[in-house]
Length: 415
Image 1 (cartoon, rainbow, N blue to C red):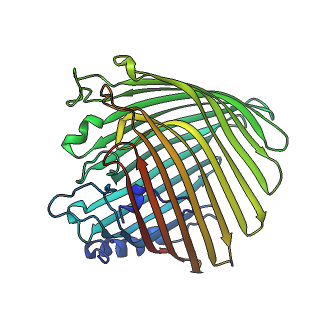
Image 2 (image 1 turned 30 degrees about the vertical axis):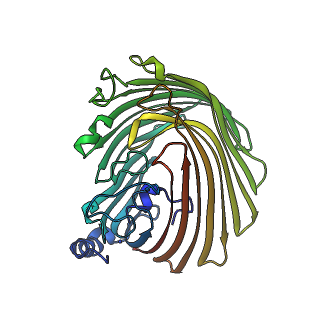
Image 3 (image 1 turned 135 degrees about the horizontal axis):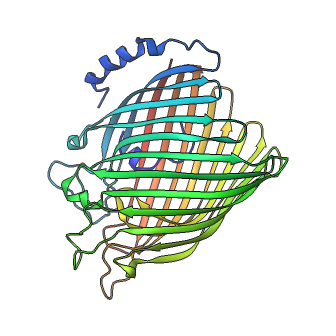
């Protein structure tokens, strides 16, 4: 299990016992040739199956004043039956990775939310000679949109295809040039949410200086051009065009102080402009810093802090300034048992709301979440996980505050 905090969208998508229609497909996958070991020592084929059951006390992230329609229930059990695998293949200097995963999500009470989600990626790690290397990749995911920020209390599936190309030129042992391009989309299945469909293209380039100890410092420029295919917002005065561009310059640092302490950070300046809606422009500093501390061979503490401009996946036309800190400790009690946790505090200043009403203050949220989890690996092909999460948001806007908790049990088999 990933030791980072499970997000709302992940926790709300996970329970009723195993969905029967999926298991014949799992059996076919397990006993197909893809489950056989790879011929070359460096290559592998690793399929898996996964079953998780989650109870969420506030599935829709409702405020105390919020109301649900007939046939919906605030709390629910969710079952997620999953199958997937990874293929890793090396051909001379070329490395190929294929990751596939499909999840069948079933809700005990809110059955209208039942859906199949997926997470897939294909990457070619290419290298031409000692100087040129990079990545060519594609990704595709389908997931259930979150409820906390849209107040849309029905099924809305997000399709997110993406394609990217990164290139790196090693001038010598000390200097490196990097560049790349990425195209991404988010497409909503719900007709009333399709005004949030977004297409973006991002290009970046930079230069990095590397030391003999493996530390590095560099500078990067990044440009993003985002378009909304259905640009006219039916609920906005004047049907405004919300396309935007972002330009940012950042300094990047990686520094290993010792074998037990490592720092990584970035700081810079970002400008976001809306050619047809300048009132929503933004400019300001952005930064993120992280620290990994391993006081013993069995313990690790990860600390992160940030001040960034970001947007919710399900509400791409609105942005907010996020500032927060997270602490995530982990302890390998034995070779088979790992305990981990995370606490996260964040403030969100919603300076980029779709609608600004005269006399109404901008929305501001304060979020807190905490998670503890235990992982047990009785054999190399079996992993058991149990996790508990508490989450809370306080907002100066009515209907946007909520509180709740989740508990999740997972069994995963790897072959």
